[in-house]
Image (cartoon, rainbow, N blue to C red):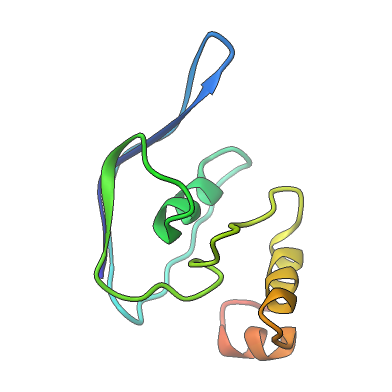
Length: 111
């Protein structure tokens, strides 16, 4: 399981801070699939980075009681200037995998 407990993330911005996530409680069981939908700047990529351990929360915590596979566990995270499709292809190249194999492994990807 992956547990998020009172997960909060904010970043310095100008003279203050921008709060991206606030008080997220979430449990993800092994084999469970989740989807993140939201507008630009809603915190989707930030949550993925927190789940994968690429970034640390401002407060709260993430507990991982199972292995985290790529791309979630990819320590480099996602490139914000690329689309999801391009990120998946890029990470596949880093790991020496064919993109088709990755796409076929995940039924939620449909390109």
